[in-house]
Length: 354
Image (cartoon, rainbow, N blue to C red; front, side):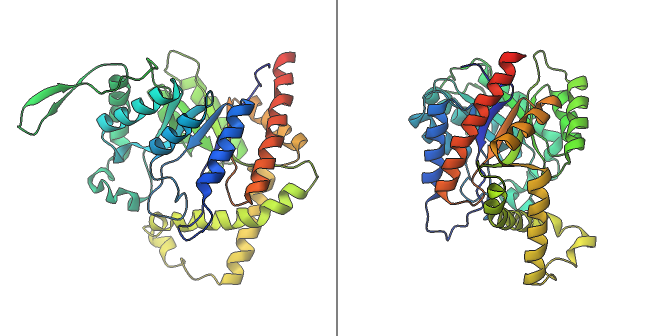
């Protein structure tokens, strides 16, 4: 099979709350096994804490290990590890295990974190999290390549520490999660790939950010841009939007609630939080979902999905990470992935003709 012009991957970021009876890990594993069988590019697992938004994903390395045991070829990626919450030594150890279990298929997108509540795990790391991430990423990459770092042990002695097990990949594939143009510039200076989305940017903003990123990029290889898009593909015109509208509205509501702790720190916004009626909230969220589906998603027919992929490729996106678990019933999610595979095959024809 010819590789597609744009790689298609799966991205998981479920908003399911802890009270839900249905085990969403079953859906995740079914999706991943299908994607592995059909040759989709990668699976991305986030790191989230203490909120219904992303509640199933407190540690991507744990799920990465489970995925490694049941798949053979799909790339396994963290999207994203909140680097300031972790000791680089421990992180390199954990992902070294997953790299071995998977036969060398892991990659990590690092993020600074944004929600202060996440930092109950490392409260002193919040204020300067943006400043410290470059050194932390460099430390992980150095440990991954086999170098040691100097640390003080329990007896007070400075010792050189090497991580074990040694990973199979000699170089760790690294992304930086960037939701705004400034993040793209940071990634360019660090020489990393970029993982982004359209939650905080319009398509034209993304195009400018990607262009600027590629012009500034300081790495020695070709930079890679991965874009996350909410995705559901259905062959019947209009049905994808009809089915996705309500779950996406609920998803966006949980997303906003999950960021409320950070929002409420702003004095100009704090007084307005909680003052919207339930009916107004529903209307606002449905309006948001309609606009989001129309301008910031890959929800539609296969033809519409191919058009989105071609448009993203034209502005410099190498991979679309399809967020599929935003609330549709499991049967629809799996059927949507089947259609996504057909989209991938259509994009492969594009590359074959290039």
